[in-house]
Amino acid sequence: MKIIIDTDPGQDDAVAILLALASPELELLGLTVVAGNVPLSLTQQNARKICELAGRPDIPIFSGCDKPLQRELVTAEHVHGRTGLDGIALPDPSMPLQSAHAVDFIIDSLRREAPGSVTLVPIGPLTNIAQAFRRAPDIVARVGRIVLMGGACFEGGNITPAAEFNIHVDPDAARIVFASGAPLTVIPLDVTHKALTSREWIETMRGLGPVGQAVASWTDFFERYDRAKYGSEGAPLHDPCAVAWLLEPALFSGRFINVEIETESRLTLGMTVADWWGVTGRAPNATFIREVERDRLFDLLARRIARLDGHGSG
Ligand code: BDR
Ligand code: CA
Image 1 (tube, rainbow, N blue to C red):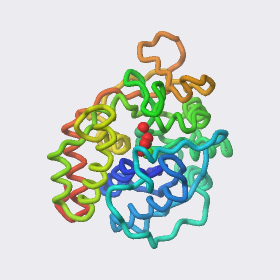
Image 2 (cartoon, rainbow, N blue to C red; image 1 turned 45 degrees about the vertical axis):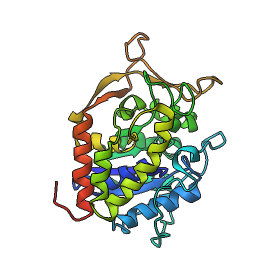
Image 3 (cartoon, rainbow, N blue to C red; image 1 turned 45 degrees about the horizontal axis):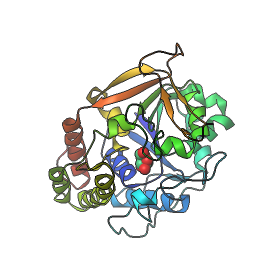
Image 4 (cartoon, helix red, strand yellow; image 1 turned 90 degrees about the vertical axis):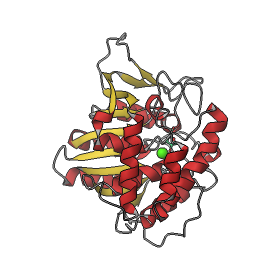
């Protein structure tokens, strides 16, 4: 399956990218980078560090939008640290950024590849995707599926009481994507807050080799925030769930429902208004995931990350 990951790394973005790189079922056409967890100057650098860590300097990386469509950028250094990838010091990257803009790469890829053959995997704010859809409406019908991490329903928000970070940062972009008509799978906080690392899993990662050690250090760093906030043991691996859904959708369950994005309210800006109970009569537009088989997810992650450190072919 051909995929483009649109990302704002981020420790959990990093694990998602590693999972994709470790999975032969997925052909990663490129990474498109967006501003989100930290400004674009850092997210594009982090994306390159991650690919070099995985021994994949051949992956094309495209820098994209440096701020939301029509708002100021909100960042999350309080979660991800000053660099966005705090937890372990990785060498400055030497692989180049591609000269094309991320939005152009998304448009060109969808026009070049067979209709329906490319899956978009956005795991940051949706600015690049919405910009591509606005500039080239013809590509929307060519998208195979969009599998995104974002939003929340029963769980409530993480950046405001009502909104999840990726959607809140660029709600106008999210509205465009959710209204586009492209097939959509949504991995919200309702799922990712069930995808919590365990101490045992982190220590298994640490024993693997350099890639596993980075994953362990990132999740250790990430965990301190969630432990303080939610009182839970373990860090939610939000973004890897989107890639895992591509690999093993049977680990997840949800409903095909109507989801719309709030773009006006001061209190609930960026809320994903998810009609789980079907009370509005509005047409379904998204498969909204609510459950994940946590142990099998972490087993999949462990087996795949181990490959990058040269262990087995699981
Ligand atoms: C999402 O926001 C970011 O902080 C994470 O990388 C993830 O994509 C979770 O709300
Ligand atoms: Ca992210």
